[in-house]
Amino acid sequence: MSEDRLRGMIEQAFAEGSPPPAQDLCASPDDESLEETEVFSGKPWRELDPDFLHRYRDALFWFTPEAFHYYLPAYLVAALVTGDENALYVHNLLFLLRPTRDDRLNEFRKERWEQLTDVQIQALESWLSWLLGKATPPGVFQQEVQQALEKVRERHWWRETRSNPDHPKP
Image (cartoon, rainbow, N blue to C red; front, side, top):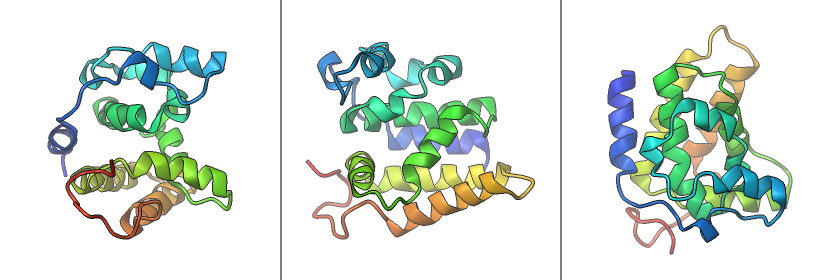
């Protein structure tokens, strides 16, 4: 799939929604996390450029599940626009998708990824497939992408059944 087509797919999948209120951006009250997330306040995800997202890549770890869900497509599109599969925010996303034995970390991840609708999950899968195609030569990065893609396809963090597959859990 071409970058343009994939970008359109991501933009369409995440077309709904508006920026979360400032008080709903950060899941942790410490100074570092607030510094990383407050700069997103009121900013539509489509207006965030790759340099901004690179600078605030750790916000992915501090966002509330709702803010994570809202700003996720900005990070996906930024990697497409720059063609930089090695951007640090890409590695942060992969980290959040990879399995762990830590129950608390799994719950943290689940709260974020379960926000996605099935259409958004399909866009994420397509993005990961694109990323896998960029991961050459074969190595650790390729293994990380493959592992993340497998976990998304298995719906590793999401509940097994959904009452309405087109909408996230309330």
